[in-house]
Image (tube, rainbow, N blue to C red; front, side, top):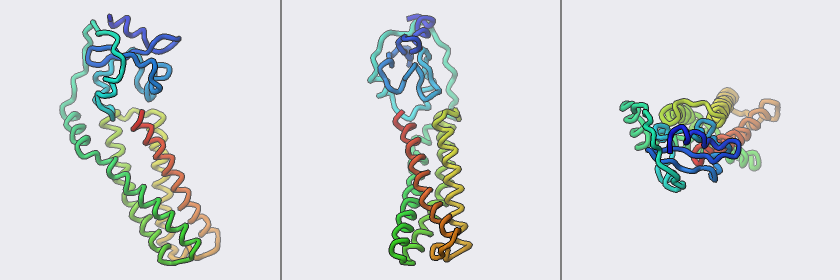
Amino acid sequence: MKKSDFQQFNGKDGKPAYIAYKGHIYNVSESKHWKNGAHMNSHMAGEDLTDAFYGAPHGEEVIERLEKVAILEDEIEYTPVDERMEALRDLYRKFHPHPMLIHFPIGSLFLGAVLQFLFLISRNSSLENAAFYAFVFGTLFEFPAVASGIISWWLNYDLTLTSIFKNKLIFSIILLVISCFIVIMRFCIADISFQVNIFSLIYNIAIFSSIIVLAILGYYGGKITWH
């Protein structure tokens, strides 16, 4: 199939959606991840995705499951691969720091909220103290988790600001602000959990709202992983 003909299959106006990879053309029309010929708001049907595939979080097995419809006849000039960037990507894939680091703040902040909830029921000071340290630990690990996430975004997606990444950035900042607020409040007012006033109410609301923000971040993280 000629390049000019291939580019017509963009998934719009009832047309099939085709993509090209390593000289072969594949049909993605039936894929739920290619609605209206768009994928992740960054890739469009009718394009050669050979170079873009290097940054994908999945392997070639995804391509192999697609229907192969033709061979791309025209020669396409591929952008030379930056060897240093490829080395960094390979290093990232080997150690995958973001998926590893993100579990520490998730687990710690969730544990801190559970312990605080149990404290409010039992008034056991040991539970309140443990909740505080869980939030300290989780807050400290948020910084390397967010930093590794930005590195992953840079290496794998060239910092393309799709709606998913935009929301992840916004809610990551919100979570950092909330968790830092919790730690600072508890550090400055050691008995804040035992008080019955507006400060104690705000403190507890912040603790439990962090779980909601965590869930939202997990949702968008899942959309990236399973796109």
